[in-house]
Length: 397
Image 1 (cartoon, helix red, strand yellow):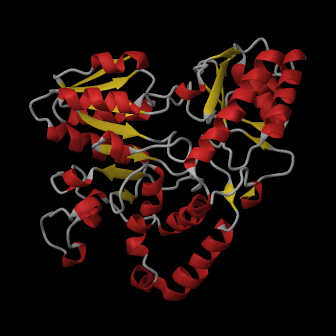
Image 2 (tube, rainbow, N blue to C red):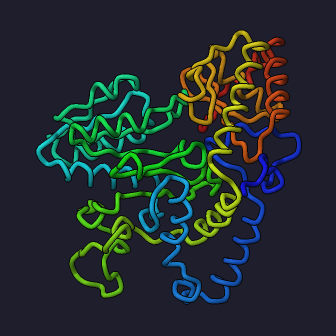
């Protein structure tokens, strides 16, 4: 049975703070500090290097990834953890391109997260400029998929607006044209129901520090469709992706299954924290999370449009076309967000003028939403954002 939402008691939430930025960094789950301390003292501190065998450190990237597999509709042992999301983008994209050697176009959209596009540009340079990165408006993706497209690389939820791509429709068109699909689930995993199996996606990647609450720097994950994985030729042929890494063979021989997508040494401490954070999903159903997310975001939009008329909705109005975030445009959005944060309501800002708010039903309720909008309205009505201290741009916005 799914636990009743929200589950505020399972998180460390500072008094007086309404946290609307779980779409960027999830809060600290209770139990994570104790788990980390235990791993440090009882495993690293006591067992030293024996921990790789005695405490199962080497198996963590696959074992913990199986918890994530359930949340994205992937079968057991088809997901592995490690490295950063940008590395996993490169792995998936390079492998996908190799699957279509007679095609030279990588298709993405202009709303994709810039890092994904940067990785594509870097890969193209490594391939000798024979390939092309083509970007179109998000709503034009399906029409742009044709038989000359090698790879379609899409982030399911637009990081700036929260616009939700139609995964099933894009997958059907890509399959019909013979293109390989790479899905970035950074703003999807733990936020909305995902089923990579039903759509037949070849690859999916994502991070674990947003809705999965793994903490800053938590490792990324990669999924490869099981019938394809043993035919993938990894471009990043790391030691731990070798079939027998401790045989220390001179030449690379990829491991069988998803473990061939491993690259470097797993971050043992960070994975332990993530494993603890993921336990909350044992008691939660994604359908319930999605239902609550829509209710909260709809309430937020109604309240903002009633009380903060200077803001313009950037996200799709139809909740079924949004992820679990809502964005509003405001000319002085950065300063207004800094003023809001000072008052204990934490969202974030995306250039040039977008105020972004995440809705995580694991720790938010209707009263949080109403209180947040009340503070926002006060800031706007009284121009409390119009102070020099709020206009100095921080390194991280």
